[in-house]
Image (cartoon, rainbow, N blue to C red; front, side, top):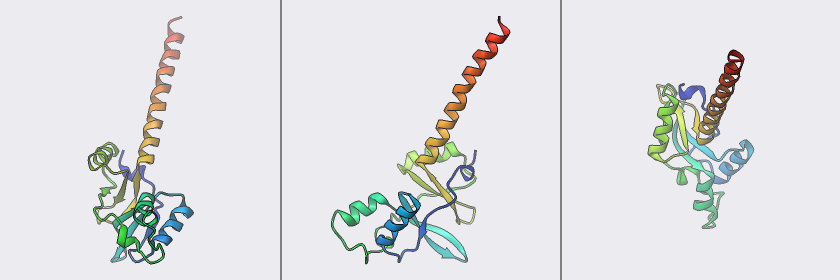
Length: 149
């Protein structure tokens, strides 16, 4: 199954020049742990960085910096790993593991933002698959009992 089918399509985004205070408020408003930083290029939102709740704590709150003047561009992770929406989910999981990231922005062929694949999305998918497999075991048992009375 391609990641485009399971990724979260509604992504909280910001521009580089917005403050980290605004990022924290947006995270709270949307109940998310990260914000993608995007640039508009010919009307397409291109992901260029990411800021996580951990970034806010470690980079801003712990050293007691002014969260109203520091921008998301100042603290964003710029080495952003993305995955195309057509990539197989299990290939994306391996990629997440190899890059040790919990979040992968999902892009189209032009590099435009489509969504985000998170560890939570992956765990939910795997839990559903495991449930389906466990139901299959139960069905097989019942089927055998009906046919071998």
